[in-house]
Image (cartoon, rainbow, N blue to C red; front, side, top):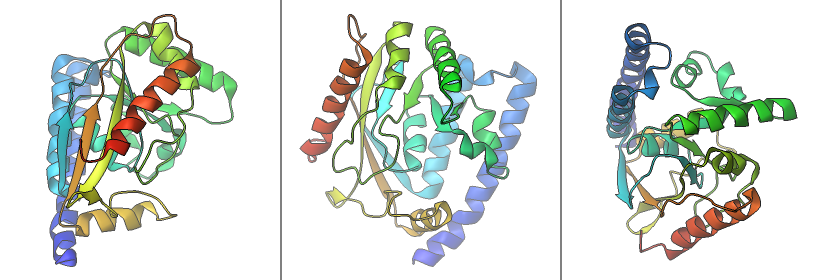
Length: 249
């Protein structure tokens, strides 16, 4: 059955991604380069990601209320982006390696993703300034402060540098706990780990009978009189506690 699912889903994925390019180009022409900032643009992002989730068999279950501002989530898989964006239209921070991907690198670029060039303090400072401005003008920014993917059993250390943007912008910040479950246990297919290539993991996802992503949005708050390390520690604790609760998600 796995190969039958793959042969059914893979052509749909290709067609859907192509439709995404066409849609982005049309929105770019009709509403401007920053089409994703407007109300209708944000609605379009959520609708498109919901459709993408349906095609790849990703079912998204939500607890809590998402709030505009800075979202800090644990990172399990590339499907985290689809799950979050199907609930609230967020702009993500990604390594600039994605820009080198043939064709696929263009879609996040045209959809408001921020790209981080590692090893350049000046580039990091410019990026932080751009994120602060975006937060202050109504964008929701989602970050994965662990810096890598893992199995989702617990939250890894949250690197604190990115949280300076939440403090300087004066916006709400919110932790997001992400787990993938199958029959009440952690799903072994969903995590993008152990040296598996992107292509291999896409194959595993498309062959699976379905993936259940459970998102818990913790209480949002405005960090007042708080430095970035304290903020990172608080958000990490909130997310980690939810992951370890397990059955309460």
